[in-house]
Image (cartoon, rainbow, N blue to C red; front, side):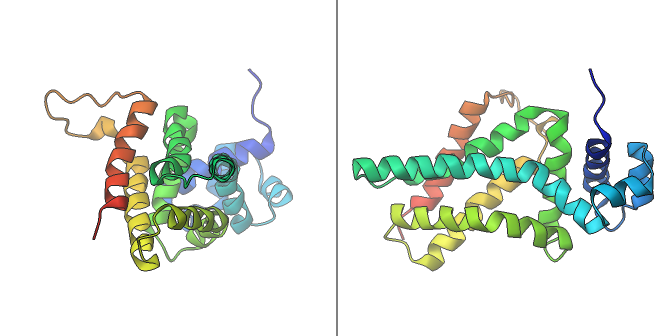
Length: 211
C-alpha cells in the first residue's frame, strides 16, 4: 500500500492533533513532527495554520454535505414531480443517514467526528466560524424544506425543533458506545439502517408533535 503524500500526511496529522488537543493548543511543530515533514511543506501547501484548519474541516465536511444536499434535492424534485409534500421523516433522512454512515468508516472518521464535537463545544472559536460557513447553505435548504413539510409550525418553533433534533444527532456522533454503561439485554451493535430508523422515530416525533 502506498504511503500518503506530503499534503495528506499533514492533513492527517493536523486532524488528529486538532481533535485531541484543540486548534490553539496544537503547534505547527507538533503537526510537522507527526507528519514527518518540515515547516516549509506546511507553508507551501496551506500558507497558514488557519488555512490548514479550514482544509482539515472541509476535506471531509464538503463531500458529506454534497451527499446530504444531493439527497435532499432529489427528494424535493421527486415531490415536485408527484405534487406531494415531502414528509418530515424523509427530509430529515437525507441529513441523518449520510451522517450516521460516517460513523461506520472506522478510524479515519473518528478523528474528524471528535474534531466536530470539539468545534461544537467551543462555539466562539475560529473553527466554529469556518464550520458554520460551510454548513450554512445546507442548513438553510433543510430549514426551507421542513417549513414546507410542517406548515403548521411557526418559524420560531421550527427553528428550535430542528436545533433539538440536530443536537441529538451531534451527541450521537460524539458519543462512543464502547464506553457506555449498557443495561442487560441491550444490544448496541445495530446495523446502520436500523440505527437511522431508530433515530428518526425519535426525532420525527419531536418535530411533528402538536402544540
